[in-house]
Every structure is written in structure tokens, then in C-alpha cells.
Length: 252
Image (cartoon, rainbow, N blue to C red):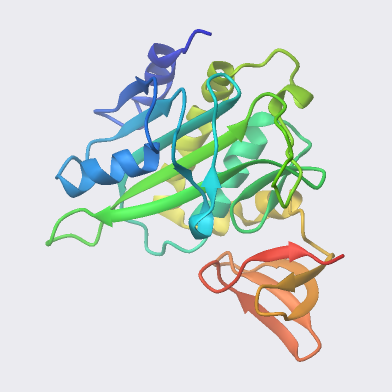
């Protein structure tokens, strides 16, 4: 497989001056690597792609396994200074979904679904960008299934890109995703989540469905508010759920 890193760089560097694009044959986690660099003072904009991750991570400490060619795993690092960080994973998800296929849906707060199967996920982490600034170094990690994978041990069945685009490989997927992702980060920094709310709503996999929160609360999902919090109508009334509070799955 050919990785189109030069083309990725050419299409993105105008929005991210100083950008570099790197490919690693194997790494524990692209997010972990960029976090190590950031803590060492390296805050330059970068897209870091791994052919294989040996210790990939998802939200709430979950693991993300990847094999060469079977998955696309990469992270984008750049300094951001938005007025609010709320809704960033939703904005990133909306940009990626629209770049991939009309059938890709978004399961709040950070998963990409096809039907009720998981195509991939997003993990956002930040590191300080210096003592005299409110900006932070944002690391946006993305993992997508490219080829079919076993469902053994998974709580949600897997979907994969070649269901939607037969013959698509990880390099082609990266090329499709990067320009809108970089543009979304730039717009989020300037305008926050508000301009992405409608795009998320059009692909909201939970809207109108019964859901159960990790604390046992049940209700009906009713979209997201202007900050990206999940709105759930429960027996006790409406609840706004933030990503730091709960994990959400559709109820049976």
C-alpha cells in the first residue's frame, strides 16, 4: 500500500503552516507519542500515521487494536485556543463522517457508526502549551476499521470502510479525511461547536432512541445542546450529559 503523505501535506499545509506528515511502521499509540513530544516541548503541527499500533487507546481507557492495512490509525497535533473546548469531538466526528460516506453516523460522544456497528472512534487529549498562554496542544486521534475484523470480545459489532467503498485502503481514507479535519479544527478554534451542531444532528445515531446511561438512568436521547452535551429526557425530567460523566449506549 502507498501512503500519500506528500499529497496530504500539500493539501493541509496552507491551513497549518509548519505542518509535517510522518509515517511510523509501528508505535504503541500515535496519541501517546504526540503527548510525549508535547511534554518535551515539541508543539509543532503534525499528522502522525502508524501502520500498526500495539497499544492504541480509546475513550475511558479502552483498547484499540490495529493491524497493518486493516485499520487507519493516526493523530493530528496542533496548538488550539478556542473559547470553549466543549463539543470538539463532535465537530471532528461530523467532519470525518461527511468526508467518508452519507451512511456514516455519529454515536455521541466520539464514535463513528454504520447502522449500529462501529466503524471507528476519536480520542482527543490536550497538553499545556506554555505557562503564559491559555492555548493547549490538542491531539486528535482517529482509528477506523478499513477491512473486516472479527467481532470476538467486542460489545459493539464492527463496521469497516470497504463496506462503503470497496477497494478503499487506509491511505485513500487518510487523504479523504485530512483536509476537512484540518479545516474543522481551524473553524472550531474560531467559532466553537455552534457551526457543527446541525451537521452532527443530521448524523446523530442516538436521536429519538431510548438510551441507558452508565449510572443506570434511562431516557430518550434528544440531540445535543449548543455546547455538545447530550440531551436526554428521563422520568425525572431533561438531563444534559457531558462526555466526562457517562458512557451511553442505546437501550435494548
